[in-house]
Each structure stands twice: as structure tokens, then as C-alpha cells.
Image (cartoon, rainbow, N blue to C red; front, side, top):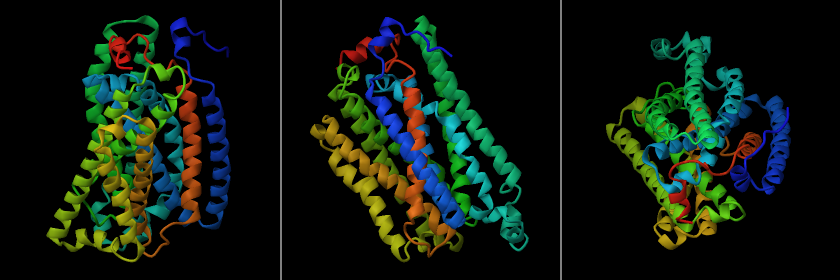
Length: 398
């Protein structure tokens, strides 16, 4: 297959060569960590599947969050999102790859989910009552539905954006707005139900009406943190040095501040409602996470995901400085991963070690492979939507 020809306008905003080096290093690191993870899976399947679940939920949250932000930007406009649209689209086009990475969770479903073990269901009246929803065929069917919805909207938006670059059709802008209004609702619903299936059902006796929105808000925080890190790196060289301005980073910082505030609000609201209700089937989930080292891990999560970024992001000067803003975003990403670990592992084994070497190995394996796929997609198109009707307005801010 021959490489497609780039127009002069596309060449002006073509991805820099250093992305090739980063892609190769990410791929090599991901493959090496994947080999270590395979060894770990043979030695300790239980630890492997726990680590894989947390690692998968962390990494899929970034492209899903960027996918949701892209639809929000299509609906509302704004130069902050227009100059970053190619990052949104490249991340969303990795969702087919992440659908393949979901397969190990299907193989390990009986190690992770008690409701998938027939011998346990046969002895539990509660699990028998929930069996019409929590059963293996329906679990698989819902997963296919979630990925199908995400892929449909993501690939349509990406295709129309490419058509806009090539044809300069003014009607495509309005078409993407309409699709995004539908897609954002679909994303919120499917991501919420995915959180029920993949994370909350680890403890099928526990439930929370705020769990889905908590999961989606976590996507948004991780997505903006990732966006800040990559836009800072891209803006350091041509062609994005003349595209991304301090004003755009100020907007990214404000959005990140909004999401960490919302995350803290939803987290505390969920805790307060359940703790004040004091129902055994609900409060036990939090009681388990106040035992041993899990309590201290929860404090670390709260500090990284809220306290530290909240106070630092209040500074307008910091938000307009890309390097300093990226240093604030990195702890949010770490806090997001630890938050998922804190939610998942105590439901599987209360007295499990806080961290196992497989937790790191699997996280790096999935992340390295996903990052290589993301960069491959990012390099395939010009780094800005060259025929968007609002592009010149966004570039005037640079």
C-alpha cells in the first residue's frame, strides 16, 4: 500500500519526526512489560487479572474521556478544543484496539466476578435474584453494545472531520454538532453502565446510584490531565508552537480544576449518603476500605486527585505556563490509577497487598501498547483541522 499524498496545507501541520522515536520507545516498553505480565499471569493468575482490570479501566478511561470532550467541543465550540481536536480523534480511533484488549477480562471473568461462578450462585439467594442481569451471556452482550456505540460515534466524527479537511464542505461542521449532541448522551449512559458491569459488580451486594457519574467524571479528569501533558509536549516544537497559546493552556487548567472539583464532590456525596444511611449492604464497602493500608491509600488518592491540583490550579499564572501545568496534571493521572485500584482490589481480596509488581507491569504493558497505537493514529493526519470554519479565530489566540 502506498502512502497517501498530503496537500500543501496538510504538510504545513504534519506531525514532527520526534513522534516516531516516542512511538518506538512506547512500543518496545509495552512489549517488554507485556512479556513480564505473561510470566506473572502464569505464576499468579489471580494477581494478573486484578492488575489487568485496573490497568485496562485506567487506560480506556483516557480515550473515552477525550472522546466525550471532543463531542462537547463540537457542540460548544472554542479554540481550546479546536487546536487539540486531532489528539481527541487519534485517541478515539484507538478504541478498536482497546476492544481487543478487553478479551483477557472475558477469559478471567470467573476469577474476577463471583456472579460468574455457578457454584457460588447456587449457594447465594442474592446472586440468584440478580442473575437476570448478572450473567455471562448478557455481560458479553452489553460489552459488545458499549464498544459498538463508542466506535460508531467516534469513527463517524473522525471520518467527517477528515472529509472536512479534504472537501471544505461547510455542512459537515453542523453535521458533527448534531451527531455529538446524540453521542454525548449515549456515551454518558453506556459508560455509566460499563462502570456497573466492570467495576461495581466486583462486589454484587453493593450498589450506589452515584457510581456511574463518578466513573465518567474520572474519565474527564484523566483525559484533561493527559491532554495537558501531550499538548505541552507538542507545543514545544513546530508546527504546534505557532498554534497552541498560553490562553489555551489556561482553559485546559480551568477544565481540569472543574473536573477534580466535581470528582471530589461526587466522591464525598456518595460517601455521605451511604455512611449516613448506615445500611449493612452499603456501608460495608467503605468499612473494608478503612482497614489496614487501604485507609492510607484512600488519603493518598484524595491528595493527588483533589487537594494538590485544587490549590495549584487556582493560580492563573501556573495555568498559563505549560511546563508547570503538566507537572500538576501528572499527579492527577497517578491519583486516577490509584483510585481505580482502591475501588477494585478490596472487593476481590480485602487483605491483598496494597501493590503487587504485576500492577505496575500490566499498567506499563497496556499503556505502552496503547500509546504506540495513539501516536500512530496522531501521525496519520495534519495536527489541526485545516478547513474548520473557526480555525483562523483559534489561531489568532496563538
